[in-house]
Length: 421
Image (tube, rainbow, N blue to C red; front, side, top):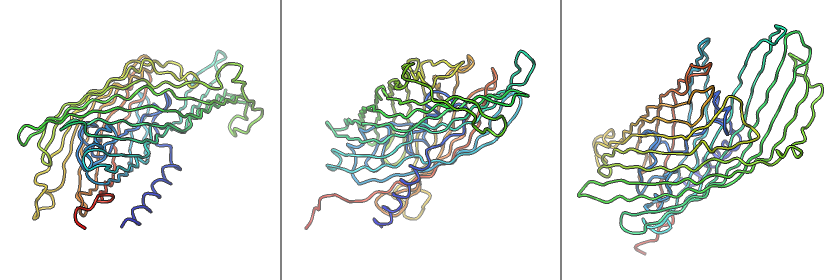
């Protein structure tokens, strides 16, 4: 069993390295791309709540959860998203499949201290946009925008119990990846077109600090949490090429490297502002839970000097999430359905992105199932989300999407000290 799991884990890792592009959204043109959902499937299914923690599940958002860990845990997931893109003039459909995460967590001291590490896709760029205008001579000008790439995170986390019901933790995230953007302009009845290609190789660090306090009131429990994801100061090493190509065939005629050193753009900084999140919930362990979460990010301070876009501004971002779960009877022996975890939630995100003077918002409804698999509390998690992002106003695109995710959470009693020789 262990050998099979290691082989599967390595296959997932190979897929993660080779398949970085996880977006087909036109909004991945902006910032550092479309931000990915850095949450486990069980958290995603509860409206994206990152506050709920227990002794058997990995929580990618709050490292304080590692202080509760009782078993060695492995978790991995993939997702598939179907999108309908609409403007005032046309409709188009698209789809994308991608890796969600790979994670491992180990108890250092039973339900007192833990350690974790893994890989999380952070953002993705994947778009192809066409803009047609008319120049002063009445000729049609066609501009094609394309983008590819994205950022990933490798992380190391630790968490511990400070006192009864109070846990704290910290995560170090290392960012790496590349962002590529290209603009091709062609004019009617002109043989040559012009091209501008840009590439940024990005790396850097940030930190995530978390706390949970979960006092009991009889058989019920109050869940409180707070998290601070510090500002990421990333280093971007940039390249730019401009030149001319044969219109239609795109055969290069003359392509030149831009001297970015002279413009002080060879090495630039990308700043992703601090995010603060607080959560409050209530429930009965292994039976039901409901909670809410609020996140705030001063996204108006976002900086990416080299890959900035016209008609774009940034404002402070915020997110509201509400969700929970229900298990009819986790000890049931005669009904499998009674042992299934049923999850649901809703979320509203103000992304902080303003395009053509319109704020871009995202609304999603989530639900999912946690299906018991074997012993040691392992489970197969299925997650579903339907939602809408953007608007058709001001010549923008409205995205309607359906996302399906599947993940395996595997637990084992490895590294535990024997009680009887």
